[in-house]
Length: 526
Image 1 (cartoon, helix red, strand yellow):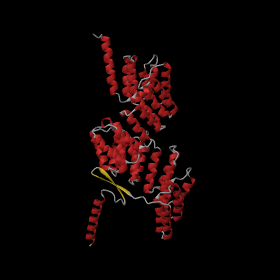
Image 2: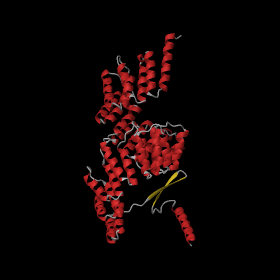
Image 3: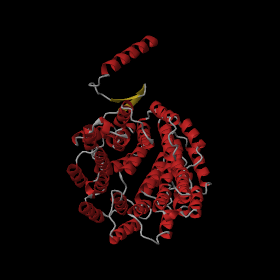
């Protein structure tokens, strides 16, 4: 029969586990810490390890380290060291590696958690040589045969050489977890084709939410949102429940395509299944609604958010600018400036300068451009100069725009010369258009739109010979006109149409509808 003391210790340990499971804030951690000190629970290494892990999972690495050092007056088992390395790997990777090395000197035996945690530090430090050394430790200890360790090694190698990662994968074999790691490795380098081959080779029972999310993210990053959405639908049919990360990936695809109905369905899914209402998720919803045409809904979500990050503010400003609501965007920026906790960054100023450009607020744009350096200490990049040149060009200040191109501390890129070409076309300045095109033919020799703009400039000035000459130069250079592409969403499915594509399975149906509409128009005219 257990003694009263043992029962008391057992009860306090259970209470500690319950308290840790309910900790969500720093205050909760501090209250739990008081309970631990009162009952001297840190004498037990498991309790100490659990508390360090909890502080780390709530993103308080300094707190984790202070607990570790304060109690480091006795030998620790390996799992305590594992948890402190886990706590420090991103915030202080050098210290995490230093602790790992001290464990080696102590002669403790590593387990399957030790190497994955320190390999995360290797990636943060961008130290490939150290990664190879840890791989050797894995070989010597036999831990490289462990699924978790092998997956971590593949992730580490993929940051430097995806071929080495693939070699390791082939040696280990096609375990589900390792397959996921290799798929992510290919996605990271933009090789969606090889990632898809591995994904399709997996047994359906081995495809978890991580596998599906990796592929959906891969297609979104590769600017193939249609395929990302198709895969998301397949994921639903396979009864794989998406998590917050999967939802973030597919929302990005919806935003790229302007698939409003699917985006609304995903929003309802979030509410219905009570997914964690993390800030990035709502930032993506705002972005999706703005890019899909429902700026009112984007504003509604934005205004109802209690905690707004700089990404939240920037996304809303960019969304309003996209809709030509420059003054509303400036109002939101003004509100953001009054927030003590949030400071604008480089991306915020790209959004705000774009807003000024859309409504022709030249003076205000100049003021914001100047305030970047003077007020916020942000050095303007080429993107900011590009926004200013676009603003000046749209407002007809071509000479000032050209002078800014000449004096900026960067070599003008295609976007800047393209902006000048478009502005000079609108203003009928053939000479500046010619100069812009000369640069663009070097930077973008195969871009048909640049030639078309100059040809149209000559045509608008009645200079037909020059207009035809530009078209001839375009033909002689072998530059082909890229057909226009449009998307339309019907019944939650996004269809893609290419101008002049007579091989589309919808071609006959489209032709019949157009023929019918043409007939109705003729009847109404007569």
